Length: 264
Image 1 (cartoon, one colour):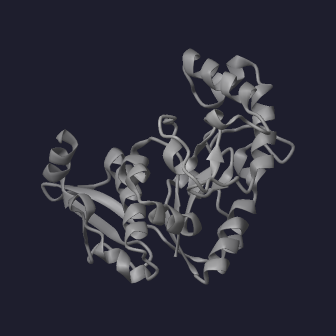
Image 2 (image 1 turned 180 degrees about the vertical axis):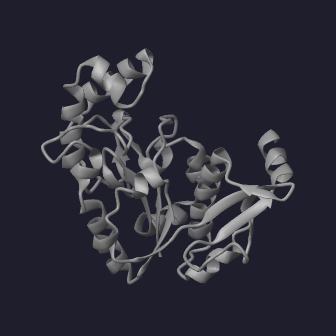
């Protein structure tokens, strides 16, 4: 199986780069997008991603500093650099070197700037959400910019692994950049719900964390059989067979358990 995650807006540069770091497949495309973004007036960059003045200035400076041959300290591996809710669940920093090597072939991070990233791929600081309407010569959005190239890259890796299955732990915004026709794989999209007095609903914070935890579960247990996803119980979730379908397994936990885990 191949698994995909979304990136995160928040970054963590505190963990040094381990051995075995790699270069992104679409590094040249990332450089091209960074050049486009750095030429935007500050007000346009602010509007592009609905940023505050301070965040707009920070990201303008990041794009201006983006380099073809960056210094070592200007880069971190993707699995360590992203620090949002999904990456709390993944907790890549506590994965063993063997786990990371296994994940390098089987885990992918979708990115507005880099297209597709492996866990050990080096990235520079950036923020560019996939839903951004950044105009390039390929169209008015990043979806138009990437076209079917993300899907083709995922399909090529799935073929290299000999698998016909992709586990989608990414958000709708990011998985929307995957051309399903070009992908040509079975897609399994797990859902994570909280049960509060019989009312089952998605709570975004918990769902994001659970998607990262599912990716970690796959990595740590070296899962290659889609049926094995049913064994996911991290954080108190359990498969709900009545709400599940083969391509959309549903995991539910009591809301009070979720609240207790958040408080801890």
